[in-house]
Image (cartoon, rainbow, N blue to C red):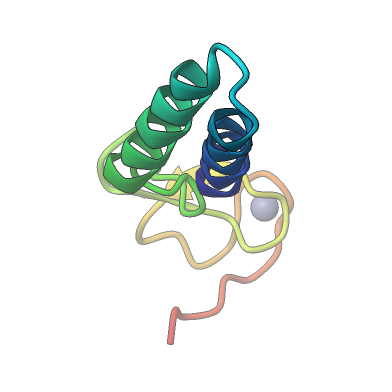
Length: 81
Ligand SMILES: [Zn+2]
């Protein structure tokens, strides 16, 4: 999103430089995309939907926090370091 915003912003600047219309619109859209990407949280670490749950290391199913063996795939859970 941040990268896309920069591309659109540079494209808007380029359109402004060559005196084409709508350059400022692309510039504004790029600015908005960068601002949104700054304020939106990165979605890299999904949170379990239920409190007291964690994700299985092997099958990524939601299992109870205290479970040592996944009830879905029967694999032993290792501790988070
Ligand atoms: Zn599992």
